[in-house]
Length: 471
Image 1: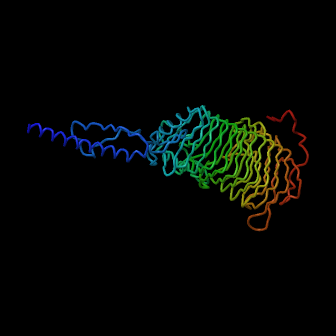
Image 2: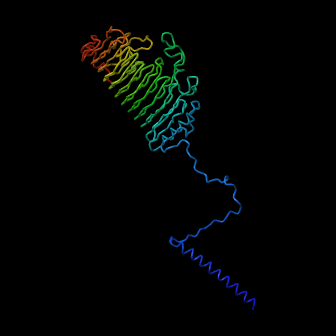
């Protein structure tokens, strides 16, 4: 009986405790029920079977490798292809790989040569055609091997950077292409190395810095090119060439360092550029048509030239050339047409307009007896020069030479030369030199200073129409 009473008491106490606990839980639930959202069951993962190691030993999942050069779609940074850019490492293959990859892009591509780096490249040909337009953005510095001794024997010594069969290409940027020409200029064969400007025996091939060959729709803009071993730019067999806002520089005594040479190239525009070198600022060779040169500052140098043409009895054709709104200073020549004896073909439709001369030795010149050695034999055949206009040519000339020189072939006179608003005064002193004419026919549209009385009037009686090769 006592045992039953004790059991009953335990049951009562347990029941009372259970009732209070239930009420407390119900009270707590009703207190928070005003949030009116159901409770979510929280699933807690089981602890690991063994204790975890220190926090520092935790390794997150591997990430995709990041591009250290911040590559953008369509931009091919040469460093991505292994270029180092320290000025000594050979970066040629990296440039070639970047070119070949960009050339296969179906959308317009940009090859980036970044600033703050100097890339050394061997003689190289970049070949097309490419699938789309291509931009070579040069913001750094590009250099070749330093001089003839460093030039690989198996590489061409006549060219450095060649672009072949390219359509729709732009070469631009804020960088520099440095040809490192000084050691090339010291070769014994160069004109200034011998006595009185003569040459000495020895190898003479020197590379053209940049050559475009059989290409079309080209733009060169904004670059600085300096110290080429030979020509800085050469365009051969190209169509639609646009050169704008570039700078070309080399010492005045650097031999054969023409700024821009064009040959068999049509539809050319050369604008807003500064060129100083040791030869012609711009030289126009055979097979060139529709060339417009405007706002060029030229000099020191040898001026702006058509030619030389007809060398080795060759046929040369040049027409529709305009040079305007430009300055030529401290140069051996101003605007010049030069042909060799024995050539054939014609130069016609040329306009030199609004050009300022500053202390130029031969401001206006036609030379049909062009010869580098002064030992050239006389020949009767010649390139026919006609329809040349000189308008608004003003400034000063070096008194060592005549301000105007029209030296035309004995058998093939120059015809239809026109002078208008020409005023050339001596750079030193007051004594004006007389213009020189030989077998030159033309007319004066205005008063010319100094006076020109040596031009022949009309047309030559001895020149038969069937003798003229009008191209």
